[in-house]
Length: 313
Image (cartoon, rainbow, N blue to C red; front, top):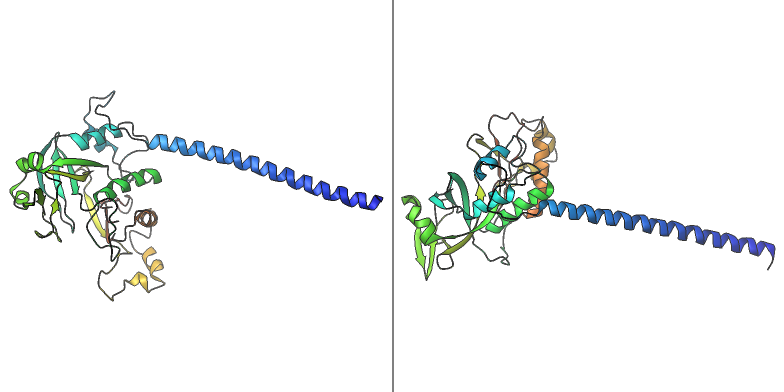
């Protein structure tokens, strides 16, 4: 083999060697990065895992007192919550001492008071897990399990702006009816062998009650925020018109966003960024029905956008 051919061959081999080396190093770096990502993921999952335990350790406070102390202007609960399991256990098991119709709104709910004086909102099961709601994005009833899933998504994203939610089974005959107000009790009826109620709300109808399986009803329980933190309702700047053939301004005006950014409370503070966070959150849970939102009162735009009513999915 001539010298020139040998040089060319060596050059080719050198290039192959270099590329192989780089490829192996990249693969090693990628594998190491993947392993670190996996470890980080497992650490995150371990931190998010919640065991519903019945006792609070190292404190004489009630679970309701601890949850109330967690609330501050920018979060409903802190990042580190060792007492979370005990509070959720209390939400799922504490005796119901009073039941009433829910607060104003379009969807069926009941306002319960648990032992110790804590208010919670009960949303009944209306669909099986695999039922698909057809029609407009905002069609159908609220899904109780969507509230549960949304709360845990709020934890995963690190927003910490959704009130605590847990699933609960209640016996309508033995746990609710004996402590129900007349207003709630008047909406109870029997369909077949099932105890049902239709409550009081904008869309509540006697012809569309929520029914238990016999007397036992599955639902979600949402912890009521402390009364020392009264809420203020706002119209969502990117809300729908809910009128057929009528578009909202944001759907046709390309300058709308600039106009919003010049309007209080979106012209300063974190509120506009909260709107963006909420848009991501709503996309992930499939919620196209956030026409209003709540913040704390008298906050001058400093309060978080509180992630309430996340069951439309």
